[in-house]
Image (tube, rainbow, N blue to C red):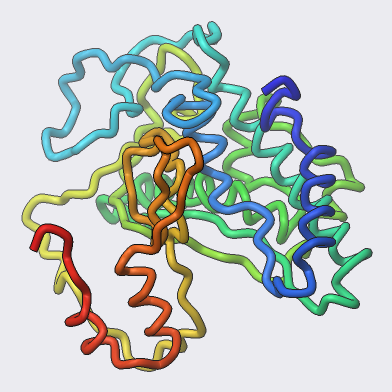
Length: 317
């Protein structure tokens, strides 16, 4: 944080990735510069739920007679309030997330440029960026809800993909944010275009989206800029089978999350889902392979998964 965190990251990040390429490039053949950078910008500088804890949730909702009772709102969504441009008490979610994302994208560009110029020819690896996105469907077939759905996708995925494909932010964001959204110089824009060998997508869930462009807000924020409201429910509409097998999907690999018990965002060390147990209290951070680690190791050796599962010893049973 003494260096400004993600609001000032480019040079330090370039030094870091240079060291990683040098030390591990003979073995690592697929590099991801940033994993889910949206979570850095939104959760770190808008809601404040992740480090560095800047920003707050959007304006506190006031009572609204038009609010649909079928909606299940996140804490950050808002109702009808009055407009204000006053800054928040802890950071400014109307500007900081955009600055952070801008710096993250330029850091990504610097990392890819470095790898391609200095390492890729001899190490024969690939480099890209992985983003997170919830799929969005319009709540109704109205043009307003359809436009809101496209806008929501722009604010979550297009925010990070459009610059590395087209060299600029989505049109919807440039229109709504105005001068609060940083601009890439012509040189930066040209440098960003095509700076990936692959684009990764992390997908967890889907949401319905409705237009909220007529709502007024008390304080400007990334959340209020979207002018949408979300719901994961829609009364009376069947959503089909909970699980549907997909035939013909080419599965090339599987990434375990995670290898070690880790520091899981705002949950800290309270969640333990690593293959390796870490004893945080003994002063040495001793590692212990869990049953899942042994299972996975044997599974990778092409042993029978069902038979391996039967061999697992569950503690306390």
